[in-house]
Length: 266
Ligand code: SF4
Image 1 (cartoon, protein in one colour):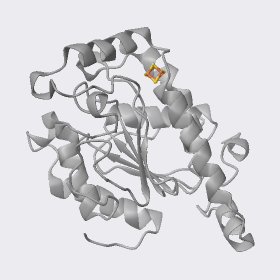
Image 2 (cartoon, protein in one colour; image 1 turned 120 degrees about the horizontal axis):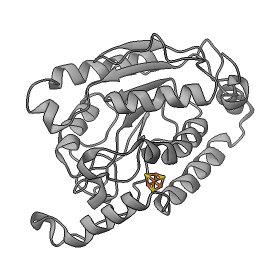
Image 3 (cartoon, helix red, strand yellow; image 1 turned 90 degrees about the horizontal axis):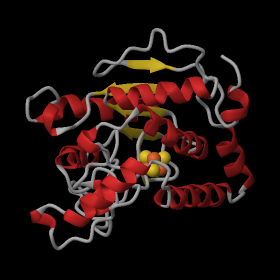
Image 4 (cartoon, helix red, strand yellow; image 1 turned 90 degrees about the vertical axis):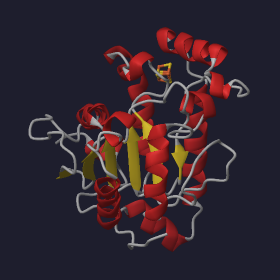
């Protein structure tokens, strides 16, 4: 391990968060500063045009639309992250769905994956509502933040490697700004690989060897963070029973426990 001290100054190997404690005790407005950094990042994400193929695809989807959503004005831009800036749990997905987040402008909002995810997040106490349909539906998150390794909907749900590389600095910046994180839940292998790539880029890991993707796989990382892997809640996985609600619920119960958040049920 090398270089973690500069990228993760707030994390020490036992998982305690030094600046948070110090800020609270000193009564300093630490949170306000962090929140505006995250807000500024989300604005930059929404304005990004780096991947020409993806920007053209998202815009075209927004022009043509799906018949069921013909009265929607599609978001059709990179999708900002969503959640609690004081999150201890990061939920890392793949990329927006063409007629889900690319339409609504919020992660996991308005598609089958979201219909599976939100009831679980609600029951686990991370979400204020069990359904998510639009950016103005009043949803609030507590203790969790949702983001993805790609911010633009890709054709066939498959971003190209160079597109993921283009988007990676946003994830690096976001992880740096979310200073109370303790647990990262990766939804699917591409998200899992994306997070491992972040860890090697930032010097937390020298190699990915020994970090294998499997549902419910769990790793304690050298800088104190916990990594939890889950199957992605895609219709392909949930309709076939590869990922059941009970399996998914256990992931988020475990995330709460690892994050030191008291268990609760909605
Ligand atoms: S995928 Fe990421 S880097 Fe590429 S255009 Fe979208 S926001 Fe920008």
